Amino acid sequence: MAGSAPPLRVLHVTAELYPWVKSGGLGDVAAALPPALAELGIDVRLLLPGFAGFLDAFHGITDTARLRTPFCPERVRVGLARVLGLECAAYLVDQPTFYDRPGNPYAGPDGRDWPDNHRRFGLFAWIAAELARGADPAWAPDIVHIHDWHAGLTPAYLAARPPPDPVRTVCTIHNLAYQGLFPAVLFPELALPAPFFAMDGVEFNGQVSFLKAGLFYGDRLTTVSPTYAREIQTPAFGCGLDGLLRSRAAELTGILNGVDPRVWDPRRDRVLPRCYGPEDVQSGKRAAQTELRRRLGLDDRPEVPLFGVVSRLTPQKGLDLLLPCLPAIVAEGGRVAILGSGDSDLEQGFARAAAAYDGRIAVEIGYDEALSHLIVAGADSVLVPSRFEPCGLTQLYALRYGTLPVVRRVGGLSDTVVDATAVSLAEDSATGFAFDGDGPQDLMSAIRRAGDLFREPALWQRMMRSAMAQDFSWAAAARQYAAVYHELCPDLSAQSLARSR
Ligand code: ADP
Image 1 (tube, rainbow, N blue to C red):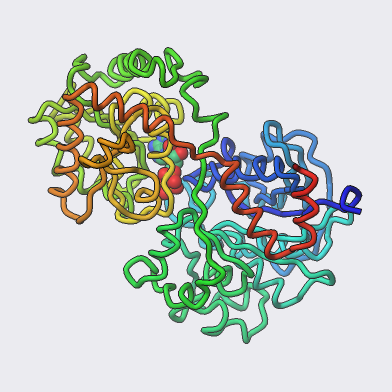
Image 2 (cartoon, protein in one colour):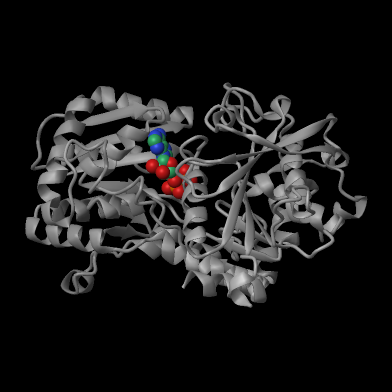
């Protein structure tokens, strides 16, 4: 009887979870997707590394298991916590010697990766596989859904020692450029059978690749936009894994990320001086812009376009293209507000520009959630000139706040921003400005197009309304993930989905 059958159980294995531990979009996805899946009647739990950011925040962590592992002599405690604000429970790999360290999840305060990351994330994946094998007598997953290289070894451990009841795996690529590569000499420390270090296995150009393990042994693969799913099957975007991905094309699906309205919604964003919706977008954005200009020391000229950037400063994000454009933007009357951190060359270049163009270019180096909301709301346009972009969240947030993105036509940027052309403007479908090419002049011509349209307020306002009307909901994404689960476990998910209707 469908009503008494257990729901489909899915364990999400993720190293990041907003707001506690986040270095990029993965943290946002891990916080938003599980509740959206729970809405569909799926029984979701998370597995997280025991970073201090989690252990300090979660209360009432109970003992689920103490497991022997090949990674340390002592037993490893697996805790279980209810996470406030997230409608699902989270397991934690509570091994302080591995995870209770300063810095970000992957690197120390000096920015260098921890030398034992293979063991830190090997243990993490090992515990995921143990949970799949029934380490928690009260709950075992039907599907283990791993995210990025950090969890990549999980399907390899399951292939090496299959659980008594079959467990299927889904591997989601949030960014193919981060692969978790380690020297071959470390392979014996991972407790995988020797034959797994092979081309048909975890070996990649003579090294161990955690991500490749997930892509090779995972039952289904997903990535975070349909265009990126196609791009990564080509040499230009495949980071050397395009051949493997082409061979798995039938099992690879692109599913666009959504926007979490609990965090990003101009109608109830507490950071803003005045909340707004499409009906009062102009006055709401004006208030945000006044506050932003005051906060960053930009001159008060609402009649000129203000371009915003919120980004990691890495080669991926293409912001080296922006640096040489700054004089022209200022000369043509534009203003720029930049929030980011990363490459020191870029940090210094932007800081120099801010000093040279006081009041016209403002730069904050660092990570600042509140300021990121103020920029997304207060800027007229955000710049996302990424060289590649699996999905991109900044442009999604910007669209929702009526802030028109200037993007390079790649990956998720291409799937989510409709370029302003004569046709799209006439059809009222235009939501931003897209460019091809990889030179500063290509970015500058898109910025100029944005500046020209900004000076036609009626057209700009129609575009703002079209942008705000876009629906990037997690419910839509969750339905597509549920369809992937359904293909893997047809009987179980049919029961879950039937109950949720
Ligand atoms: P990626 O995951 O490649 O960094 P995404 O666009 O998918 O890029 O996600 C980036 C996320 O990180 C967004 O939520 C963005 O607002 C946030 N972000 C990036 N840099 C900063 C920063 N310096 N301060 C605050 N938030 C930032």
